[in-house]
Length: 267
Image (cartoon, rainbow, N blue to C red):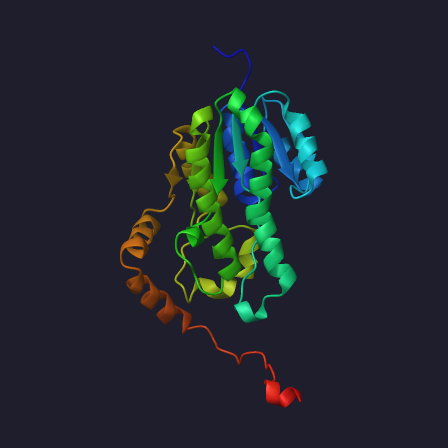
C-alpha cells in the first residue's frame, strides 16, 4: 500500500474547467501542482482547496525552463497529469492571422506533447494516468472554429497514440470531450451560440463528469449524451452532419473575401 497521497498536475488551473478539476482532485485527497500563466489566478484556485498540499507554478509550458520547474515541483512520482490549458481563436479562416493560428496550436497541442513527454518517467513510477481535455470540436469539426478544431482533433490523436504506446509502462490515457462551456473564452463565440444552437455547460458540470471518467480511467469521456450521439453520426454518416452545420452556418452574416490581386493586376 502506498505511503504517499496521490499527486496530480493540472495545467490551466487558474480558471474554468481547470479550476473546477482542481477542486474535484482536492476533494478526492490529491496533492496538487497547479500550473498556469497567471500566478494570481492560480493562488485564487489554491485558496479554495483545503486539506491537501498545493504548489503553484506560473509557467509557459512551451518553454523548456518552465517545464523543468514543473518537474522539480513534482519530485519522483506522479499519479495524474491533466493537460487542460487551452486557448481559442474564432472566426473565418481568412480573418485568422499567423500568430492567432500559431498560438492555438502551440497551446492546445505542442504544449501537452512536450509536458507529457517530460513527465512520463514520473508517471511510470506510479502507473499514472493522463487526462487530455479536448472538446467536442475535436470530434465534430465546426466552421469558424478551424484552428481550434484542428488542434483538438490532433489532441485526440495524441491521446490514442499515447494510450497504445504507454501501455507497457501501465500508464493509461483519457480524452475528455466536453461541449461548449461557460468560461471567459465564451466571449469569443457568443455570436455563434444561437446560429449553431449550442448548449453550454458550466465548468463544474464538465469537471464532475470528467472526474468520474478519469477515476475510472476511461479512454474517452463525453460529458454530454446528445453530443455523443452526434459524434457517432459524424463518424458513420458525415454527410448528414456536413449538411446540418452548413445549413446552420448560413445564419451567420457573410462578408467578402479579402481582395488579392491577380498576377495580371500586379504587373
